[in-house]
Length: 227
Image 1 (tube, rainbow, N blue to C red):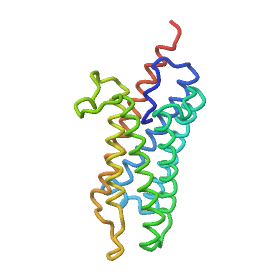
Image 2 (tube, rainbow, N blue to C red; image 1 turned 135 degrees about the vertical axis):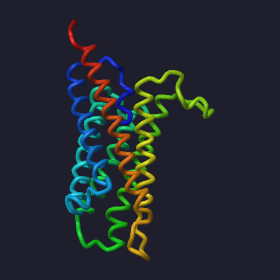
Image 3 (cartoon, rainbow, N blue to C red; image 1 turned 180 degrees about the horizontal axis):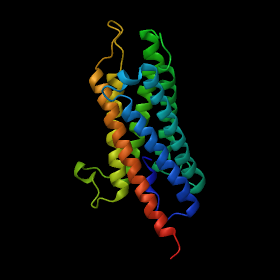
Image 4 (spheres, rainbow, N blue to C red; image 1 turned 135 degrees about the horizontal axis):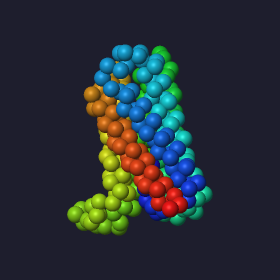
């Protein structure tokens, strides 16, 4: 999703069908990560169910990211060719790391060392992958500029808006990952509030990006439809 809007607006009907599933996957995954850390949710459903919501969301992220990488590799012939393909590839790796992190979070009775090694470390590296992916996609929409004033394109095109929103979500996920570190001496999370709100707000950014992508695909469908 991060670099997906960089494709040309006019798409083949078959490609548009794939894009609809891609946008839906990111939207559902984002909704899971938005609800999971929300205040009162874990108290209402229990720790096990809350962890399952995160794991389910990571699976939807991975499926959608795989579809995006497939589209960039097979349909557009972009493999190794440009930054948008690398954005999709690195994003896919990040989702796999989130799969590992959220899967291990389903386990109970983990020691502090095991939590940091099995849950926190994959989450941190997955968030780093998302940040690199988001930065690559944002750079594609703005071009090879040097001055900070030039980092924003002249026109607020949909691709730039989507890349900017998703980059903000990547930054927030990174903040959440750092704050989620379990301090060995106390056995508690380093900063619980930033960890929860960083995840929720980052997921909200991804959800907005998915909805923007869905809107773009509906527009593409309208253009592809026979008149």
